[in-house]
Amino acid sequence: MTTVFLEFKAKPGLGNGLVGKLKEILPDTRSYDGNQSVDVYQQADDPDTCIIHSQWDSQGHWEKYMAWREETGVLSAFVEALEGPPSIRFFNKTDA
Image (cartoon, rainbow, N blue to C red; front, side, top):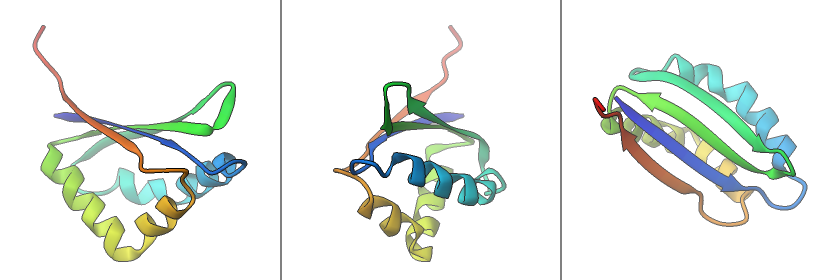
């Protein structure tokens, strides 16, 4: 299993709107092949800063999902509302 942390900063004042849009589209993410879970967190003192925490069967499943989001145009619309590129980090669970 792969855990993905995607952190982004929306353009000033757009954070709540992006979270609202995510609320609309995340049901499709949750039912997408390979997705185990997805949660969105807003920074307590800055609602324009958010983290999407998701778990996938593999990084390949996440990459396939992101390609689909790019094909549908959702990804480019999302990125246009950001101050800059998001930070994306992948982690694999250990047996420790």
